Length: 499
Ligand code: NAD
Image 1 (cartoon, rainbow, N blue to C red):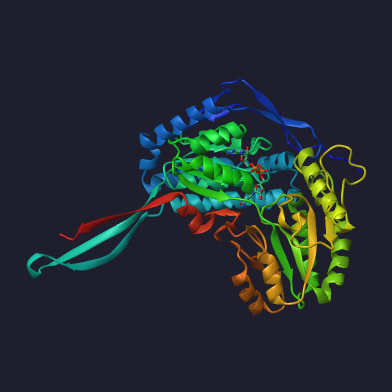
Image 2 (cartoon, rainbow, N blue to C red; image 1 turned 60 degrees about the horizontal axis):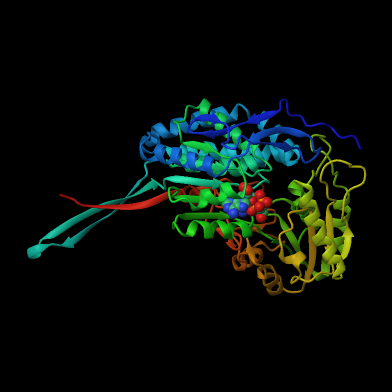
């Protein structure tokens, strides 16, 4: 197999972005960022520490309390958000290439979900920033002294939370970082962003765009780093809200770290979502969706449906057809246009996925296809699309989020059984149902405990107006849509007499 080299045009090299200035980290350390498809170095960033977060929080606090940002009129802030949007939009092709090199995404997926979708979101948030934040309450006539009447009126006002600490995961760096920074800034907050140490480069493009759009000093600050930076950000009393995307285990730590200061918490965590195939499903439609559910971003997507619950009457046919489809997936460097699935993020992720598969096999699972490294790819962290059957939903392979291209097949006989297995999970993020009977599928979706369910492929693409988030260990709160914007505001009631 020929490995195409990454298509980014330059080596990226970033300092931290604090108070509107590029600054070295106080440790003076820098770390390389590698392309998981080739293991080549594609750039480097300063590595921040507690001292740097301290400075960034101070800058964000000052900008919120005394700077102009939170006091701008809705129209003025909206205009600034459109400048920020324009500065990013003109770099869209470059960002796509960087996402491919940094995350291993295929080009069609990097172009659409990774980059076009959050930019579409930013346009929506910039428009939303211009709205009047006040909603009038119905007037009320109350009894006053001596039999008089008192006319009471009032409004609710949506105000910014204040300083927002944003922590993002490695798998969708531009999408996740902009998905936090965009609505937070649009609603008048100031932000300290900590991207994942695996994929920090895309987030610094947000800083360059903020500088170009002339956002006031301290409104957006970016500090890279690991656990120490995340701990400081989530525990500091000057931070009013933490918005976190990552694993449930770290999410629980973030909640604990934030608890002493009782700050607002927004958590977007992991999943192990079901894909339910009823007896009457059209397999011509299901199989491409099932391949996508297992191989998109090499399985490193929170909402991917990796537990396939299939009606026993069609289970054998389903397994055979999915096997054929998965074996046609072209694994390799996504800089090569023919490739349909890229690598895992690092060797450690490969080892973790492989350990789960081996444990399942040792427990009695049958490997229908895949398991291990594809042949002929010496560099990069590739794992074959893998399908397992003869598993029980109670096993770790069915309960834990693997974050790799691995699916399990579990049979069922009745809709009730499918719902019961779907809900027998510590997670509740997403899921899919396929059936010719859309009414029954709709009723089933009401009974599945998750933040979202799509029927027969759903909306067809990511809908920026649909709230996204999870139940149980999949999180707290929602991103996207009106609900996502409201997460970044506090509602306040102001009452007055109509005199
Ligand atoms: P992770 O939990 O390992 O790390 C996430 C972020 O938290 C990173 O920036 C990391 O440096 C930071 N961090 C680590 N320890 C911390 C601490 N003690 N305090 C504060 N921050 C800390 O997750 P990951 O491996 O980067 O990403 C994969 C996970 O993210 C998966 O579980 C996936 O499902 C989840 N995810 C969820 C969504 C969603 O919208 N629900 C989207 C994408 C990814």
